[in-house]
Image (cartoon, rainbow, N blue to C red):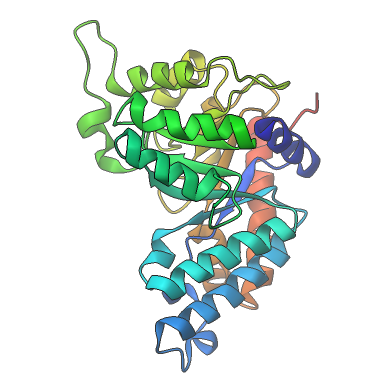
Amino acid sequence: MIFDALTRAIERTKNPTCVGLDTSFDYLPSPMKEGANTAKERMKAVFSFNRNIIDAVIGIVPAVKVQIAYYEVYGAAGIECFVRTCAYAKEKGLFVIADCKRNDIGTTASQYARAYFGEEAFAPVDLLTVNGYLGTDGVRPFAELCEKHDKGIFVLVKTSNPSSGELQDLTFPDGTSVYERMGDLVNAWGGGTEGECGYTRVGAVVGATYPEEAKKLRLRMPHAFFLVPGYGAQGGNASMLTPCFHEGGRGAIVNNSRGILCAYQKRGGDYAEAARVAAIDMRADLLSALGGICER
């Protein structure tokens, strides 16, 4: 089962982190940007950058998260780069999280689900972020294909952005918040799919920037694996994200994008080596806060 396999990979690397390949062309070192004026040329440079970052972090991190918006902006050339990046990461043995936040009404959601998880899937990915705020008919197609093809999803529950509370923190008459109610739905959507490690195929996106909310959700959602954005550039630190984890550092994976992709801008030197050092430093930071990763 996908979350069993991801849990074991985290245990092997002693590292519950993923590198976010939210690769803006602007992040590339100046020499890589020279002469890249067309979409095709820019995406060729971005893929080269991504490939070298992936090579640098193999054996340090278990997964990458590829944010499709940074590729869609360049049209067909960008989608080709997205696919090549996912394929290269898979080839190197990393888990691939496609950060696409897809959803729509049921019939359209089923097409999105097929695009990522069906026989006709256009990119080799293991996990996908999904916007669950359309309700059950928009999530069921993803959940069904997860079961069929051994995939997993991360449903938006409590996001890391500053304005998330405008909707997610609103409360019902019984005092339950919208994000807590979404957590209950995630429990229901994943019910009965628990693997050996106790996690269902329907995980949750829970931001590191809201530790109190994360603490409530971890208690409320014991069988959901968490994808945790917000570390680093968005203001989250290691101590803030510990409520997302179970004892022994299990049950969550933390994303870091700019802090790794752009590490060379602060550290100097080769960008891939700087990314490797930043990934190692992040692992040490998390392990210090979590008290280590225990194997089952």
